[in-house]
Every structure is written in C-alpha cells, then in structure tokens.
Length: 420
Ligand code: BGC
Image (cartoon, rainbow, N blue to C red; front, side, top):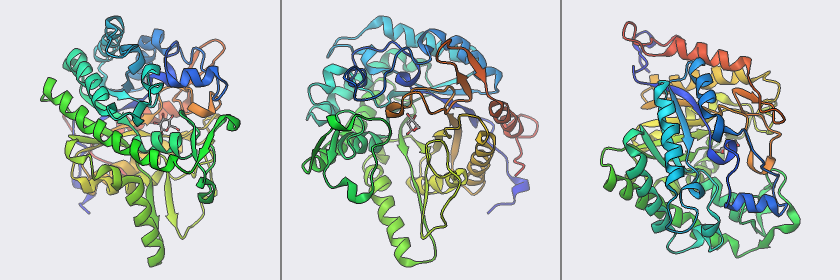
C-alpha cells in the first residue's frame, strides 16, 4: 500500500450519477417491457419521471450537486422502431440530451442498451436469435456514427448476466422463462412479476446459456462496429459484479472462487479483449462463512458499501481501466444514503490508492425511477420524485455526495489529495 499522504486523485477523475432511459424517460412505446406491463406481468410504467421532456432541468440539478459527468442510456426502440428503420427525430433528441450535458460541464457517457428491447426484436426471439449479435452491432455502429463525436464513452450492454438470468433462469423479466430447478438455489422472483404467466421448464437452462453466448458475441461485434466508425471511442461493457469473499475456511474460499467464476469471469474472460474500459456495477457483497449482515437496504439487500473495494479488485485482474458505472441503494426516507455513499466513495478511493485504475464514480441513481419488476416503490434517487406532480426534491444525502466530490476532486493546486 502506498503512503496515503503521497496519493492524489487523478485530476480527470469524474463524478456523477447514472440513469437508464426506460426507467426515467416515460412515453417509450414498442418494447418488451411495455408489452409485459400491458399484459399485467410487471407493474405499470406510465410517464415515469418524464425525464424525456425534463432532462434539462434534471441536468441543472446534477450540475448544482457538483457532478461533472453523467451516465445515461439510449432507448433502442426509439432509434430503431422497426427492424432496419432509423428514427432520425429520436437521434436528434439524444443529440440535444448530449449537448445539454456538455453545456453544463457534465461529461456524457452512454449505454446503448439497458435491459429493454424493441418489440420487433423480442417478438422474433430477441437474444435467442442466431443473428442477434449482428442486429445489435448494426445499431451500435449507427449510434457511434450519428452521436459518437460528442460522447466521452460508449458502453455496449448493461449487466448481461442480470438480463439473462432474470429472463431465462428466474423468469422474473421478459421473456419470463423459469428454470424448473431454480428453487433449489433459493431463487426468488425479484419483484411483483405475475407468477401465473411464467413459463417453467428445464430446457430454459440451455436457452439461457445460448443467450449468454449471444450477448458475448453481441458485445464483441458491437465493439468492432463502433471502432469502425470511431477508432478513438472508449468502448466498455457494464458488468454487475458481486464481491464474493470467504472466511479462513478453504471450502468457503473454493465456493467464493466458483461463484465468482460463474457470475463474473465466465462472461468477462470472453469479452475483456474488446473492452477499452470496464464499468463495474456494485450492489452485493457475499462472504461465504459469514458474518451475517443485519442491516438491509429497502431492497432487502445487505448494507455493505465497503464491498465495492473487493468488486473493483476482482475486476482489476483484466488490466483495463475501470469506472464505477453504478452503485447505490434504495432508501425511501434517506436515512442511510449519506453513510452508504460516503463508505462507497471512500472504498472506491481506497482501491484507487491501492493501485486499481479507477477513472470515475457514478451513483445509482440521479432520480427515483421505475425499478423494473418492483415498479415505483423503491427509491434509489439522489433526487426524490413525486409521481403525482412530477415535482423534484433534492434529498439531503445528495448534498453530502456533493461535499465528498468537492473534497476529493482533483484540482490544479492540490491534485485532490485524498483524506481518508
Ligand atoms: C441496474 C439498474 C437497477 C439497479 C437497482 C442495476 O442492476 O442496472 O437498472 O435499477 O440495479 O436494482
């Protein structure tokens, strides 16, 4: 470990928050999730935060909160509403979003696809389709060509493992296929998915594996498509990283290694060569052999913000620059968020001090939002949304995050010396 007094946060380390289009924009038509909601399989979506029309005001708040970067996603169904047909008006919309960020000094990072699929694609098999990687890569190349000039970075896929396991093992998300033996592993449904409409089978296990491999190919081909258009673009994948740990017991150490292999390495080993950076989404720390964590977030997840240190360490083995693409908690009364963010930021900076190449930190999320199969009940936002009036209210913890940013921001004069 280096002497902490000698350590400096790099001057261009960036700070911000993340959102995803479907969870905040409202008014998105022609997606698998919208159809699922119409069929009563998942909670209704409605106008969400109406961020599609209010993004400028939301970015004003992000700026006031001291952010200098922002991660958002582009809704594939808006851009390609029918197979091979591009909607140029929607491209212009996202161009305005990017400009609005830049004008406010927020560096724009985008994700091409964050869980929700255009209906024409999902109805014809989605990522089960053999040609799914080519279809995704075509979309990736199009965005890079149209919007790449003004972006700081493009992430191809958000959390491929979560998408595949919730869709094809747990059956909690579209296309609602549940592996018949998943209960043996104590899996729950994750939210309010209508269980009677879920298709249970043994065979979905094999489809899950096929989907995972199509996602691997989709990322790798999208990387090439983006690089063809924009050789200098910083391309990443965003990977949900569980920090598996173990006590002294060798059996527990083995369990942690196996779990980490299947959850993280299996996918990453096959895509890291086509990553300029890796986005780490952190929500879970699991220590085999305990101790049991009493305190839970509103999601019922362990309150373990320090686990981000291990998640970053685990991902650092790929020897690529990392960024925290998401980390945060659901906390409806904001009683724990400031503590969580403080520990999460300090643990991120500790990893940086210990030699992990971390480039930025995005809290999840800027706004309360549609938490997928949980609907609107879970509150992840730095900004609270009143869903009746759409009024925005800045939570106290957002100001604490601002103080942390100010304290650690690299400046010309002191290079943001870390005070841990
Ligand atoms: C996802 C977000 C989600 C968050 C909280 C992440 O896995 O990328 O879309 O809202 O977790 O559950």
